Length: 225
Image 1 (cartoon, one colour):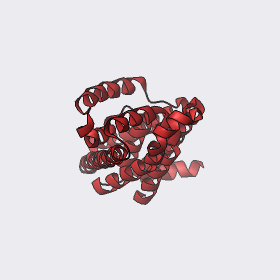
Image 2 (cartoon, helix red, strand yellow):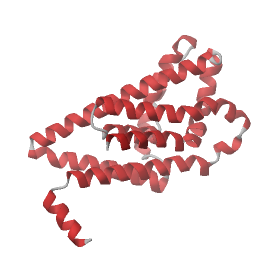
Image 3 (cartoon, rainbow, N blue to C red):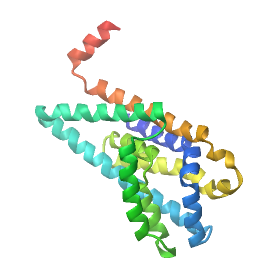
């Protein structure tokens, strides 16, 4: 399953390309313009890779600890189940609405505004790229949720590294596309990646719920099928 989740994260990054170009193309162009291309782009993408990898490792470690606590204490097992239900709901929101919950968007924008003001400038491009992991983006948060379910810090780091690499393909071309191909900014293209990410996330959550389900309940469900 860990390998499947890593590939899922990569596909989310690739499929979310139009969304990334629409949401972050202008920001990438601004950062690269300050630092100068191509050096600025290389620093920005290296920072993104570092930030996403660390975020994936932390998310996976946190969820791994929660899983361990749930295994050790029957009281915490419902919390583990509710976490997967929350992931399923998140995926459903992205699939149906093609956007993240508004309260998450607001909180993410506040954090990003504070971080961005502190990493502006030519010398801080690498740090700005790492801080991209705090960008208020439903696609990014969904990839982090996938990474958190991957099994451990190394698996989570790998998942987010692949997501960063997949999405960087479009972001590297983003500044150029932003100026020349306005079709990439269309809402329809931008929504594709979000909906696909929601479907992938919901599928991962359903698998996790079935995997953790009591064998007797699972057998009863199978009997109904």
